[in-house]
Structure formats: C-alpha cells, structure tokens
Amino acid sequence: MSKKEKGDKKPQLHKDLKGFDIHINEFGEIVTNKPIENLNEFLDEHVEDKKLKDQKGEEE
Image (cartoon, rainbow, N blue to C red; front, side, top):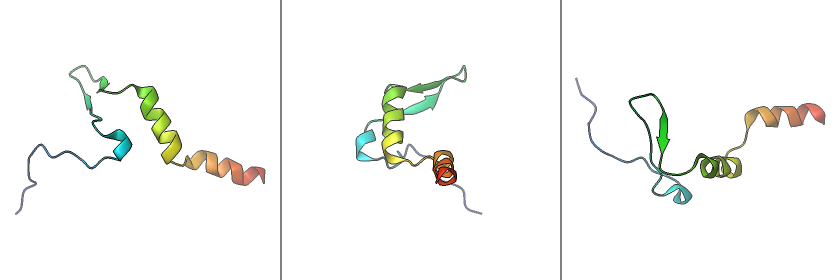
C-alpha cells in the first residue's frame, strides 16, 4: 500500500495572501502571521457568502 508523502510542502495561495501562515499552538489557539482583519477583508472580497445569497433571493 502507498503512504502519503511527508514533507514541508506549502499549499498554493492567492497572490494577495503570499507569505500567509496559520497554525494551532499547544493551547489550541489559532496563530497567524497576519491580522485576522486583513484575512476577513480578503474573504469578503473573494468569497460569496451562501447564507446572504439565499436571503437576497427571498427578498426579491
């Protein structure tokens, strides 16, 4: 049987998130090298919120 490769491969990131790193420390806290506010701004611009999309359809 094949085993998954173990390595320090970095995932592909959007060019605006270059250098972004996130991990969970020994206390279970999420630690990032960029402020959460910047991440939220990026997500607001590039990801459509499914819940808000459904609400817009009901109003029309």
